[in-house]
Length: 221
Image 1 (tube, rainbow, N blue to C red):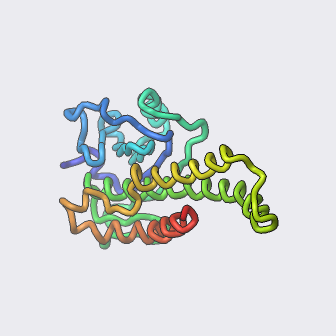
Image 2: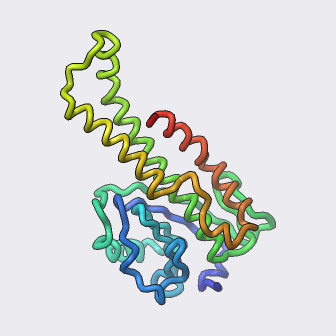
Image 3: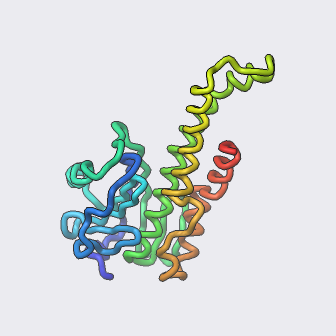
């Protein structure tokens, strides 16, 4: 599908983690550029937004003055909105001879809907991993005194409710990683556009998605 921003030479991708979950059922299919993932034009020809149900929106070429207005329209659809959203940005340069990631920026020969969707998928997973890395690190800090007490005395003084709460928080992180973000899965876009496998692989390497997920899995185990 042809995009109205197709002639742009330089573009900024901006991923924003808005909350725990984003209800995408409210959008009419007729208003969307694509549904997997849900992709919309923002304010006519000014930009594109890719939305993910795990609370992330990735904006392409959306001016700062339009960003806040668009995000306001999403707030009623959010579960547990964050007061200080996580943000990740990525520069995109078009009209290049090769497709890939160089020096922290994406090089494209041209802009297409499917390329933006692949970039959005990788960028959103990077943001989710960043959030979970912080949460797991925080939980480990809380668990360390319990582990030390167990090693020293052979038991812990904390009651079962507190221990179960800590276990529950870890399980919740694991559930969200596997069930919602599906970090280990390739984007569905690649089923229809397998020639973009190389672009996704470059992004996967740039953000170290596999390595970071494996590290988180080991900590959760």
